[in-house]
Image (cartoon, rainbow, N blue to C red; front, top):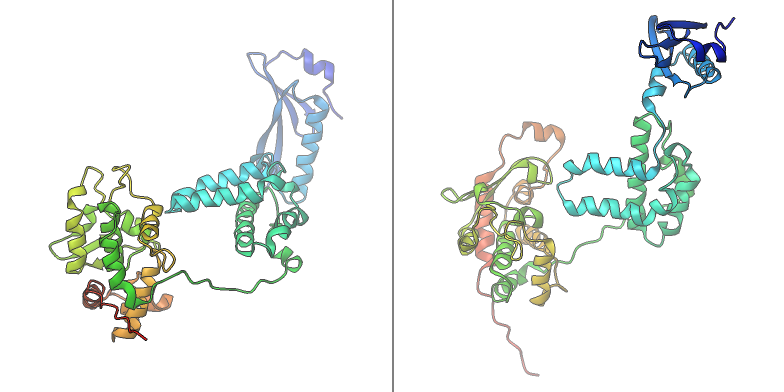
Length: 393
């Protein structure tokens, strides 16, 4: 039978534990502070659980909490897990936490910004102020249905990012099932997988493009960077972030650390004479930032991706190719105009080659074979374009 009453709880001043029965105690501190404590056996071990301070937690509330904990233990659970879990956050706060913990592993600030902007535009107006444990499949469908067929690529990104946030909620113990998971597949029509090809020049037009780029009015940094990017078949972000400390001009190598590679693995790029000449042209730009091609506006920062895109636009090339399209042009040229093995062509683009087992046994990055291929590419890309002969009718 309970031993405490509301009046007795208020009147107690003697320091120590004062039992109410069922493992529930009111702890009185020497300072006069009072709090609830429950002694309970969890999986064979005695544990003391704090249930809050008195009078903020009343006697009736403490008894109810103690009874709930005993029921949880009787069902094989652990009340401490429920305490650690805490109140489920709103979707907005959960998304912010997921964005925060993932941002360090995203190599592109643009991707991090796009990740949040996509949720802010499409998901937060509907889900933002709902606690994650109250979000249902219908709530997720309310977000996705209007854009699923009208903006399929955007819809895929939105769903994937909602699913990531809700998976975090599952891992934190706030929910048991992901409402953006496979459970909603049946309510969304299947979308065909269409691979959109980025604009790319025919490889035969690359020498002409190189001449146009060199003669453009763009900054020295932009012109040199784009020529270097084309001659190394590098990705835009990798080239724009290149540093002098990564280049060994004596042996003609650009050694890119894994932290700057899409694959996360360090990569060596053989540098042709033409690529080294592009670096030499940019030597006057060298500053304390160590960047090969610093931003014309902010010399301590890499240039933005839009700088190279603007160069193409101003040079009249943007309708025919993207910056990334020069990698496609290189790959087409290598396949059609050389006898290079598949692995050499793919490694020149820093692509992963072979299965996981094959990769485990691959001890060489085929650098010297790639050097020969890149020398061929440089000679082709920097050749004087053939004049266009117009025939009269």
